[in-house]
Image: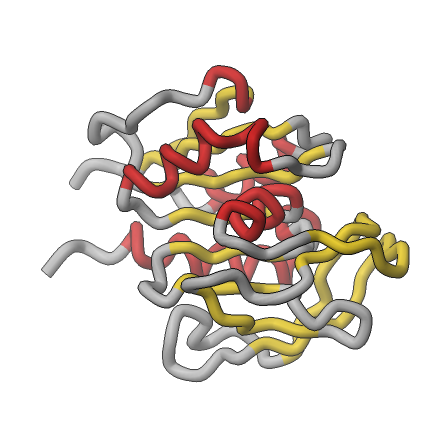
Length: 190
């Protein structure tokens, strides 16, 4: 069996190394490209996409080519912090300023029997931001909330796109969400 490959699009994140290591810990191969060099298509080379965080507020026009890649690829996609913002903005949500949060914060998840099956209902996730998605964008549902952020984690209605306000690369609870996302890449096709 070929080892699945994940393409991580670096939106200027300060934590690409830890993010990449989390996927490699699961036995997945990774490639990283700067956002400006994101490909037009995956050509079967990658089985998943990850949009990293960003140091600047996301403006969907700056990421149109990445949004087109996500929409056209059909592969599972994970948006982390700024990556979530790009995906949410592209689907009609807006960003709003909120309380500055830096550090670990509890997040309540809807785990059920879906994508997050087996993940703890309340997790401690690392936050570093002041911008928040205002609502679930069209075609998405909120599956994670916290006291300061009612839209912590979103999932597309088709289950292909998972996005989170938190930086999953820093804590074991965050790794549990990465593992849940990657699970679909590790299960052989039936």
